[in-house]
Amino acid sequence: RRYSDLHFYQLKQIKRVRVIRRHDGYYTQFLIDQIREEKKELTGKQTGLDVGLNFFYTDSSGTQIDNPRFLRKDERKIKKLQRRLSRTLKGSQNWKKARNRLGRAYLKVSRRRNDWVCKLAQHVIQSNDLVAIENLRIRNLLKNHKLAKSINDAAWYRFREWLEYFGRIYGVPVIAVEPAYTSQQCSNCGEQVVKTLSTRTHDCPDCGYVADRDHNAAINILKSALKQLSNTVGQTEINASGEIDLCLVGKTQSSKSARTSRKRKPKS
Image (tube, rainbow, N blue to C red; front, side, top):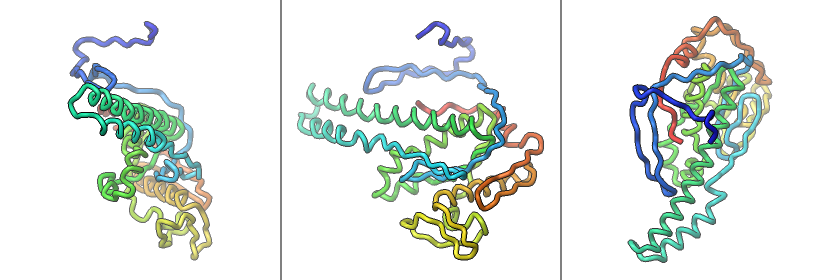
């Protein structure tokens, strides 16, 4: 690396040093006592994100991000390595080599996935002044064994960790709302429209509003987050097309705490 890319810290700033063994070698991890803050221009935009499996997320403006499915793409290669491992004698040199190759394959998938969600989260934070997400109980969702592999591959929780991390750095509030009824409620009139998981279009019989199911949910997520901030935020208006006007009254409490609090960076 170039000399200018290196960062130097005082000894008292280094709080902990860990040596970590991966399948491709050893790494040293430093825990540094330092507050990182970045300046960001106000964009006048807010967004709600509804994560899913067909699309990684759909936001409140209707934009959909494809799910990269890193594990699924490399699944054939991983299964081949698993078969090779199963044919070797446990404890032998060939077994150790085969296990190491399999571990490196999983490590490569994990790093590609984490790098992707990290860059995506930073882009979302830099593009908005407020981000609303669902407070999903990932552990409960993983009890569905048919979807567990796809949910793990989507890395929703890691995406949320990076959103909250960059939110603190750039002073952008990241609000987690309860996911109950976000897909069922009409974002235009508020009526409950019962849908099955296979129903992908929201069609309200009461007001006639039609939208993609995930787009409708993303608008509801954003509206719910703005409602939580009603004590510190001015009047909000959301029309049927999903356009949102938000008038900030000074600095919100969430923004202030986001700039001053310190939390460990998500694991890479």
